[in-house]
Amino acid sequence: MNKEEVTKHVKQVIKMEMLKKDINFVELRKMMEEKGYNYSLDAIRQKVGRGTYDARFLFEFTDSLDLDVKFVDKE
Image 1 (tube, rainbow, N blue to C red):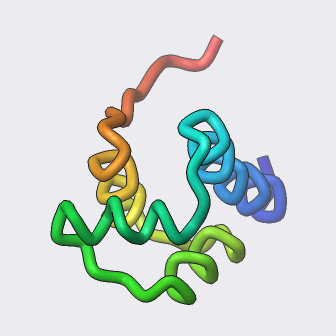
Image 2 (image 1 turned 180 degrees about the vertical axis):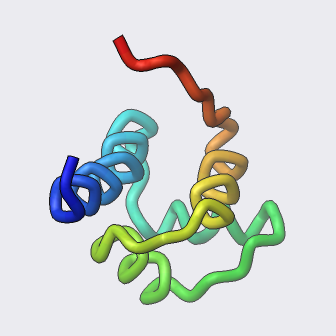
């Protein structure tokens, strides 16, 4: 994957999980805040929209939605 493909994939990861859980950014912010992760609504939208969030944000996101990050070997 090149840099553009990685960025596109990273953008889709969180959006797909939000669709699966049927939540929007306002609900995501509330869920994250309840776990002690404090981000403004704009900050969350920007991180996801740009696809430039760091691993910490990804883990906070998954924790807030009661998800686990799992690494698997490529086929």
